[in-house]
Figure 1: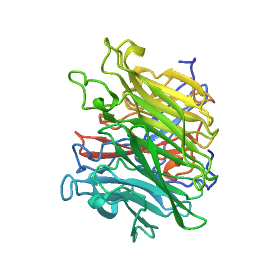
Figure 2: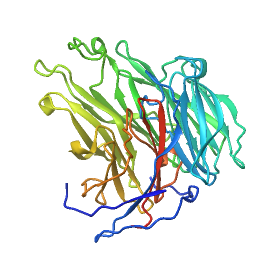
Figure 3: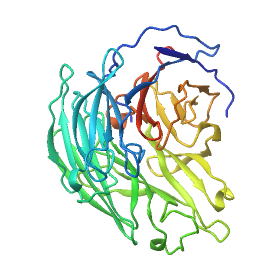
Length: 427
């Protein structure tokens, strides 16, 4: 059934070209409307699975992965279960039916990490995993609730059980897969391969880095461009720092934004960088862009990140940075603490911006995606949004901009994979 929510507008507190598609029809409902005209319709929480993989590298791990898509054939999500154990977990591909229930239509061995799920404009689904440490892509097109998937080894991917794999697809169906290497000492690599729809061939690159960067958000664009946002993840000793008492073994105190205008001919170039340097007073510096990254319809990159250290006087803050395609910082402000620890930013079919916080607060935003308006509280029915927050059907998954947003999230002490939908078409 539908849960009805609305919020009022308040004081300040790359466009997809393929046709938008609809999810299976939900039950009808009556909308409420505020004086300012903003309204959102929310479906009730649905349980996709209550038996997902837990622990390090389990189903909830990461946050950068593409986890849910919507095509002309319906809504699909991919998650992992325990399977054969820590390094041989299994993926499940589930489809939502017209009765708002979920059916597993394909499965396979994923390796340690959660898989990525992508959709092409013709409705072909892609699942990317690392079984036995080998980068693999499965593909198939659903027909009448069934799917046959073929598998292919992805070229130029390092073999190993910790690839920190990432993926993204553009509106023309060009997809890119990335893995990261390094971490124990200075130096690192991005291994990335892009499959081109016009030639049906892979284009592969290895990019040398100063250090390892992980939890990468991948944004191919139809003009052959590629954008990456990634967080530095290395031993404290690799940076020349002594590990602070009680700190995690790896330092997360910098992130970068890389771009290339031509994946066929030009290397990626870092165009924006941020670092929180440890000091004597604040040795446990933290600057992590794992929360979210979003490439908007104006070509600006939105980076949601956490910051703690001398810059924040030791406080932990959630931040929102907007960077131009040339690397200029256009905006860099704090996200309200009330939003929760994990937030996502997205646009609807009218290119209106929203910030969705893990506390269940949904903030409409101004036309530039900068200022937050008064939020409304969604009904999460008592479920807690656990690490790593919401997965949403944004364009990098292959889902076109739409007035419907499909959302999954982990709960139940890591064991549950839950779904709901937001509909902005009445606004």
